[in-house]
Image (spheres, rainbow, N blue to C red):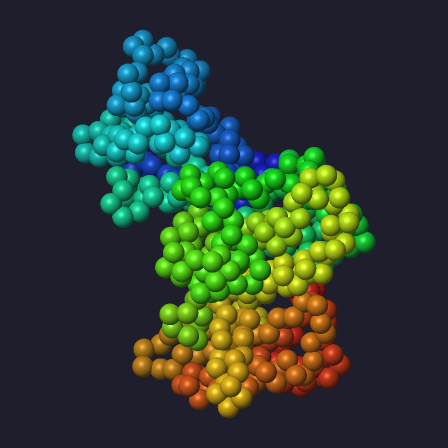
Length: 492
C-alpha cells in the first residue's frame, strides 16, 4: 500500500481507496487495460490536495484544467503530457478525439495515475469528452493496451453526479467512485485544535468540516477559547477583508445549474429560518409548492441541501442545508450585509448572537447528535441502527404533535414489527429535566400502539447545557434511559 504523506490530515479511508485503485497489489493478476476512477466533492474539501499527494507518491501525472476554450485546453493538456513523458507531440491534437487515444497509448507501461482535475471545465467546453473517454475504454479502444489509472475529478456536483448516472456514457465504466466529504465533527475539532466541546459545536455550526477554512480562509486564526469566540467571529467570518466573508455567496454562484441566484438564496433563507417543509419553503418564498420542486432538486444535486424523510410519516420530509456556512450566511449575514460591508461586525454580532444560538447552533446540534447516534449506536442502544433520522408522532388525545429529534431504527425483519432502538430529544440552550423524558415516554407509548416494537427502546436525552439532578437520578436507575452531554458527544 502506498504510504499516506504526513501532511495529509485524516482521510485514511479515502487514501486507501485511491492507493488501491492506483496500485492494485491486492489482485493476484492485474486487470488488463486502463481503468477509470471518478472523484467528486464540494469545493474546499481538499480533493486537489489529496490527488496531488497521490500523484507525487506514485510518480503520476496531475493536470488541473482551467476555464478555457477547447483549443486552449488541448494546448495546456499537451504541454502537461510533454513535461511528464518528456516526449514532444509531433502532430498537434485537432480535438479530444486525437488527445485521449494518444494519452492512453502513452501510458502503456506500468500502472500510473493520470489525474485530470476540474474535469467539468473541460466538459463545459467539450460536451462530447465523456463519450470519447467511454469509446476508448470500450472494446477495441486505445485503453485496452494501456496501464493508465485515469482519475477524473471535479467540484461541480451536478456535472460529476451526471457522469455516472442513468444513460450517461461512462455509466458502468468506473472502477472507483470516491466522494470527498467534509471532516466529521470529531475530526474537524481535532483539525482545528479545539478541545472544548462547547466551543467545538459553535465553531462547527459556522465552518463545518471544510478543511480550507482552517488556514486559507482565516489565515490560521483559531478561537482560543469560548471567551474569544465572539471576537473570532467578528474578525474572520464577519470581516469583509477575509475570504470567508463572501464564501457562502461563491459556493452558490459556482454551481452551473443555478441560473436564478435570487430564487435559490430565498429557498436557502427559508430553510435557514426554520421553514423546512415543502409548503413552508414555498410560503416563505412566495411561490406555489410545485414551483420550488426544481430549485430544491438542483440544490440536492449540488449537495447543498439534503431531503430527510420523516421516519414515522410516509411521504413527509424536511429539508436541511448541508453546508453550515450557508446556513450562517442566510440566517445571520444576508439580512445585515450592508452594515457588515462597512465594518460594523461587532455591533451586528451583538444584535444577532441570540438568533445564531437559536436558529443556527440549535438545529446544527441536532444534526451532530444524529451523527453521534449513527457512530456510537451499539454502545448506547445495544446494536448499530439501520436508519437514523427524525420524526413526528401525532398525539390525538391532546391534539398535538411530538417531534422526536433523534430516531434510531433497527433493520426491518420480514413479518415482524419495526423495532425502535431509541427515541431522542435534543436541547442546546436549556438544562434537560424529567419533563423532556416524559415527552419521549409518551411518544414511545403512542408508537407502540401503532404497531412498532418498543419493548427495548432507549429514551435518549442529548443536552448541550446539562441535565437536572432528577433526570440524572432517573437515568442511573433505568438502563433504558441514556444521557448524552457534550463530553460524551466528542468522546472517541
